[in-house]
Amino acid sequence: MAVLDTMVEALLVPVVVLEDPADAVPLGDALVAGGIPVAEVTFRTAAAPDAIKALAGRDDLLVGAGTVISAEQVDRAVDAGARFIVSPGLLPEVVRRAQEHDVAIVPGAVTPSEIMTALSLGLDTVKFFPANVYGGPSAIKALGAPFGQVRFVPTGGVSAENLDTYLSLPNVIAAGGSWMVKPSLFADGDFTAVTELSKAAVAAARKIKE
Ligand code: 3PG
Image 1 (cartoon, rainbow, N blue to C red):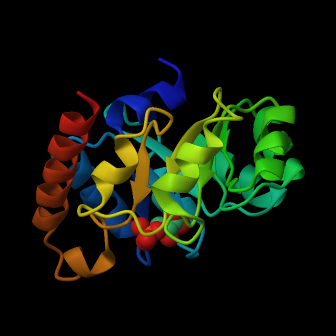
Image 2 (cartoon, helix red, strand yellow):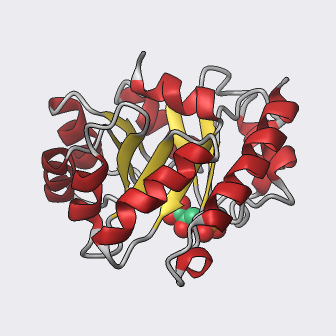
């Protein structure tokens, strides 16, 4: 199955920020137990490559790298085993490097010009970030008129409370967010809350897309 199809099927992209790579495996287990077989591990912390390595190669979890902002980070993410790359913005050299590696890339694009650049690079799926700041669901709906072929992954300010406002849009294929994987949820080493919040998010997401 194509990598982005797994994301579409999961409907959710947990945005993971880890300080300790040792948390990667239990966090991955908790997500899988909660029904989310995807993790975007962000390059915001030095632990990211090791955390990705710890999760790479699993059959039950698709691991990618997030907050990738340079071509050099694309190389490091792919070396670590990332199966997809997410970037907060759109830098053609970052997109091209991922394409050279033949790894799926979802860059950030919120304006018509950025979306047109993404299309010119051969992409049809973009991250809409920060979704709550750049106009939320109504902006994504409006962008769907000229860009009917584009699929959006809104992220940033998406939560259990407003998930339906995004996922109910036909051009939103999945929603990203950190609400089910916040470090505070497993600060005591217990990952149960991650599983519970993931289960609730999956149930809500499936109901909306039914
Ligand atoms: C991201 O990089 O995608 C965001 O930091 C996630 O946003 P959230 O924390 O508001 O879910």
